[in-house]
View 1: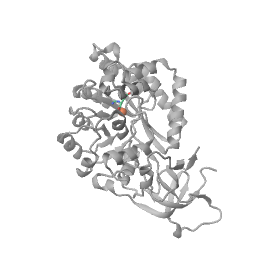
View 2: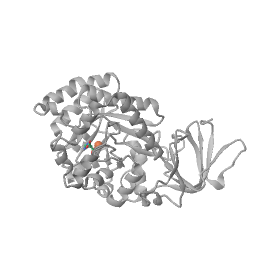
View 3: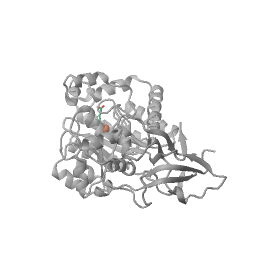
View 4: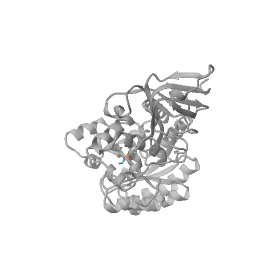
Length: 415
Ligand code: NIG
Ligand code: FE
C-alpha cells in the first residue's frame, strides 16, 4: 500500500527543484532556489516520478491522492555532521558555562568529551541503542531524512566498537540514509595522557583494522585542534584511514587555524567541518578543491564562539553545507529547522541559502546527492510537508515554531 503510486496535490509552494545533473550548489548559486507555486508531486515506488503546476495535473480516478492543504513541500534535511550516539546529557557543564567557564576550560577540568567517554563506558549497548533509536526517530519527525553519525566517545577499541555497532543497528532499523564515521581521534583518553603516541598507535593498529573488518565506518574523522590533535597527527591518521578506503570528514578550525584544512584536502576530504576561525590561506585552499565546507551554527550559538564566515565562503565560490553537530557538549540540538534559523539570524545567510545548504549540499557532504537532497525526478521521495504556510522564508523566521505537518521517507509517511 505505502509504495503504491501517490500524488500530493494542493502544495502551496514546492521548494528546492533541481535538474538531475546538479549535485551541489556552490558560491552564489547557493543564494537561488527554484520553486513552483500551487504544485503537485507524484511518487512511485518511493521515487519522485513527476511534479508541476496544479493546473497541468490530469487526475485519473485510480490515483491515490494526498491533499497538502496549502502546506509547502521541500526536500528533507540532510544532516551531515552529528554525534547522535552518546550515553548521557551534560547539563552540569551548561551551568558552568553560564557561570563563565569556556568550552576549553571545562575540558581542562576533566569535563567535555572525556566526561561523555565515562558515560559511554557505563552504559550497556542495548540501552545505548534504545536511546539512540528514540533520538533518531524524533529527528526524522523534525524533517531529517539522512544523517551522518560519528563515534568518538569510546576512545578504546571496545568503546568505539560499541558506538559504531549501534550506528550499524540504526542503519538496519531505519529506512533513511545513514553514514557512519570513525572519530577515534576525538581526544586523548585519560590513561594515555602521558603517552599520546601510544594512543595513536592503538587507534591505527587496533581500532582501525577491527572497525574495517566489521565494515563499521564509511568515513574517518579527527579533531584537529590546538590541545587535541596536531596536523602531523592528522596526517598519520588520515594516511592509515586511506589504507581502508576511509575518506576524511574532519573537525578543523573550530578555535584555531593550524593547517588542518590544507592537510585534509591533500587526502581528498569529503568535507571540512566547523571553520569558525578562518585565515586567508584556508579560504584559498578550499576555493581550489572539491571538498565541501560544513558549518555548524548551533555549536557557535550554544558555546558562544564566532560563527563561520558563510558569506565570505559564498563570495569566494565555495560550497557549504549546514549541519547540527548534535552532541551533548557543544550542540545539544539536532533540530535542523533551528539550525537553519540560527544560520539566517547570526551568519546572515538568506533563507534559500540555508535550505540549499541543508538539503542538496548536506547530501553532497555525505556523497548521496545523486539519490536525495532536491525535488528531482528519479530521486528518493524524502520530503517535508509543512502546515499551511504562505512561503518558505516563514519556516526559518518563525524560529521556535514546529511548522512540520508530516515527513516522508522514501515514499512513506513517517509516524
Ligand atoms: O563538534 N569539537 C569537537 N567535538 C564536538 C564536541 C564534542 C563534545 O563536547 O562532546 C563538536 O563540537
Ligand atoms: Fe562535531
